[in-house]
Length: 601
Image (tube, rainbow, N blue to C red; front, side):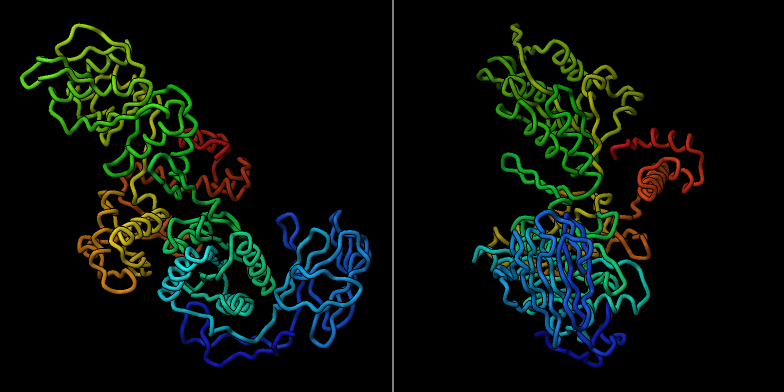
């Protein structure tokens, strides 16, 4: 029988360590049966005492429209503050936490699972006076506990999960009631922390993804019963993150990326791509689009040009293109065209014959020959001299190469992928790059956004790089403090992913405590002017980070966001979205085309 727990004076409310929680009523136990069916939640508040029939018929007190449930399947008995269940001779049976129920009454404890046929239900309390402050931790302590439990999970072959609960906006009393609903329904082994007034993280010990999803659904039902609602992100280790230190960030990303309240699994929000010895985490919406394009174009022979700032991962993207395509059984070779002078670059690309120039003591195959049947990646193609551009154009047109100093032409079957950080159209106008070569290389142009425009990935990548350094140096994993995470997310990252990796490697070496703090970060990060973070729904959200874009790009990004939000609010109806934006539908259609927004998006 559940205990009648009383609120303790002075216990903390959401986002505060000093405020006293709002009154919770008289402490009377209120039972609710939560029915989970086809992804939906149905709540049935049970009376203080009495008997309720459960079945498929419409005239029973708790009707469950599922064919596995008999017309009168079972009876729930509420008496003396407790709940029991009796099977009514059903066809598919009734169980309580795996225990078969017969004609004799079986007592059901709080949070136990009752299965009628194939329909799972949970019994829960929604009005309890206790604020479970004994389960509450400071955010940094929770992060350390998650890392510890993750390491234990690996040793003992089980799982640990984190729920990121992002409450909908509301008055302080409503948020207090929602916190009470969460904390009073946690298991005794689980702990939680409040990171912001409307954001809680919960660690579920020894809980796999299926169990975590069920707990999340149950907690959301308790939140709804308190008069509120929430987005709940669910992440499980091992599985949804490469290290336990990244688990909370993965759960939060799943919650932040959701358009509506509900339970959202990190596995659905974060893609882990593995090819060769590379492992890529795709979390930001912009990068989801990039790798979606890569997967669609990979099976074709179309040439691809990757554009983006230095350090944004262009070579990784090219590797993914090769790995997802039909040429993956053959070699991919790469060369940085800016790293070699013209004469050496020509020799590297096309090879040379013995005696072709001073020092050519033997015949050498060029990269085009080495990549025969596979892919050649030409990085920094914008740095190539006009003479080499002309020779490269001829190779692309004829699919034949001639070694330096040679007379024989050799056929090559190669897919050419190029990358640049320059605006090649401007270089064409300036006469520095051949227009006909650009057409050949740019069968499809894919832009890789800089890291400052991918804020959802910063915490994930930082934790990953930190974990790699800790593992290689033989030290225990380090969680990243909330303050350090904020510094990372508000830094402009001119060097992009490459700079982030170096920063985390340096920080891991310098860190002396049990977590990585702001003081451990490089001075360049701590001294830099932080990028402003705008607010979404009244809450600071790094995904709306106002990066230092050129004015035309900033206006375009703002327009795209407004249009996408209007379409989401209108469930994709263009007429309604145009009305929300205050523009004619024809104007909206034109903007959709100009902004590259398709119906599928």
